[in-house]
Amino acid sequence: MTAEHVLDDRPLVPVRRMANKVPEVTAYFWIIKVLTTGMGETASDLLARLLGPVPAVALGGLALVASLAVQFALRRYVAWAYWTAVVMVSVFGTMAADVLHVGLGVPYAVSTPAFLAVLAAVFVLWYVSERTLSIHSIRTRRREAFYWAAVLATFALGTAAGDLTATVGFGYLGSVVLFAAAICVPALTHRFGALNAVTAFWTAYVITRPLGASLADWMALGHTRGGLGLGLAPVTLAWTVAIVGFVGCLAMSQRDPRAQAAG
Image (cartoon, rainbow, N blue to C red; front, side, top):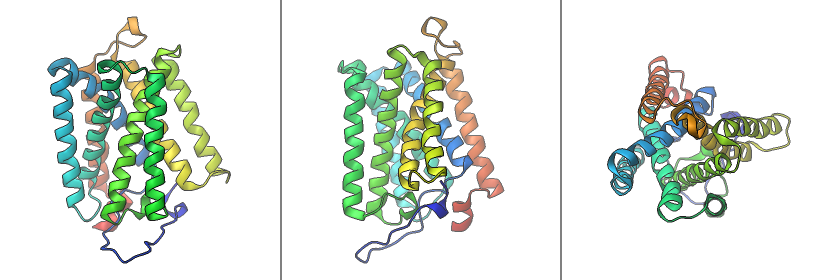
């Protein structure tokens, strides 16, 4: 699922265009994406424990708005700004799913299809408006807005789906195995021509959320809950360091094709 496999549709009317605001889809992209999902899961739980649910949600919301404001202000892809926004979406998307379940008592079996419907609605509106869902055509403000709305919906959906499987008998480690197997499906079907690149990308993008979150939960939570008991703070810190390391290496080595092209 690389750039050359994704069609870049042109808008039907003249618009003010920017350099593409999303990185190339490489192995580095997927590694950092999975890391952000796990870090967002444990960071959200850690903030709620330290600050309380309401202050944590408020802080997460403010951080999300600030990071997206920076991202939208830029006219090209900047690795640090982009991945900071993804991290903040991960944290707040986790909070959104948790608020429905913990705060309002909505079962995961209800919130999961609800978030799926929200994501489907975003995709429908995006396609009707732009005639493409390609992430390699994010060159207008409107397409960028649709992109981040879809990203936020995928994180909320993935959080609810991961918690659903963990609580219906799979457990956290079982969920890791389940979603690791599931993410192979779009990769293989695209590889053998049965699924187009855009559909394969977004399917894999959704699955990375419960995959990373389940792995982080398994590492952080106690033995009584089927985890390794490493703790929320250590796991959050370790995954944050890994994210910073990968993004920093990309920036310094110029292995990020989009950053290199923009520079």
